[in-house]
Image (cartoon, rainbow, N blue to C red; front, side, top):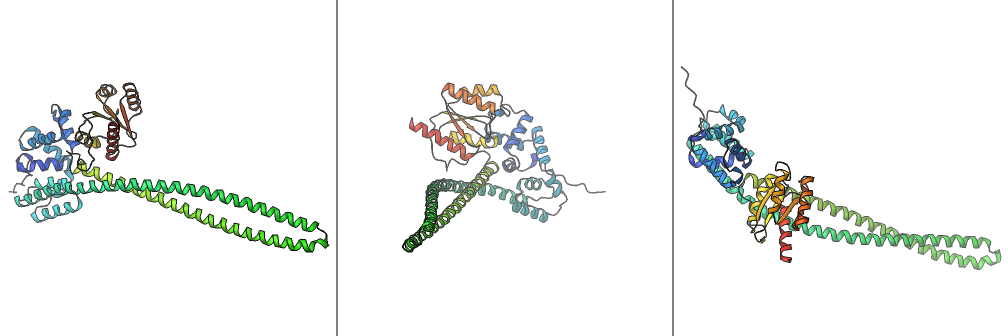
Length: 398
């Protein structure tokens, strides 16, 4: 008679202390909200991110239909990894699989597949749980360092932009001056050549007896003119070399500015990635953002992307303001935009991520109601932070 195979550990039987790490590591905020709609959690739209996380931690601890539905969802999400590790029976091979996941970054899928694996030991589970716990601290520390480096890069980028603009303006002024001088000298060359031609014609028309004295005078004038022509030609060559050098310098500065912008975009993307994966419940930028007093004003952000907007709310609230969002017509209706515009004191819109209809409606409302409208060049954390700075500057001026 064959020995019955041991089954994977159900979610309800896993050690309760691991529930928080399972929910935080294996599920994104978007997935929690999707599950909440399917489970028909009441008041889901008003539940804060931390409270929503806490709800699922309780579900993971209780042996209920919701618990079984949650496990089914996670099993389906990581089915490939579960199937891949299901054939392993030795604990040392399971441990090697975890070490490999740490190196490759495949943490969430491997974490779930191992802690529910039928062959896993308590000692290995404790080791895996401890490393996942420490990874969250390391990610937080790394994010703080990246925020500081991002702030430094922004300042350096602004300084490079100013320097490049100053050099570009100076270069243009120099070019205009050199070009004008070249044109002037070319005209002088033409004039001298005309004089030489006139002298040659006059020499041919002069009687032979008078040519002796005239020839000497003409030779002297011709020699003087040739020296001037040589000097002018050399000056033109020198100015052309300087012009080419200045043009090369301008190209180099433009390339340097492009590299700086590219580096800033990479750091911006890396920062948003850390914000979503490592700390989905917090902005993470409050320690590095300059303090602003929004004086309790309600900031309405129309457009943008949902995964970025969840970081804007704590950024506004940490600076004594209120934050509301409308996606600009993607899923929120036009009638809702009308009602929410009335509640706002200040409206902010990213130009790269908003519908044409919503933009027209926002501009019309702000003009009629004389509300402040801040237009941002793009939907990013840096653009939103600068928009808040512009609001703060206007408040201080008033």
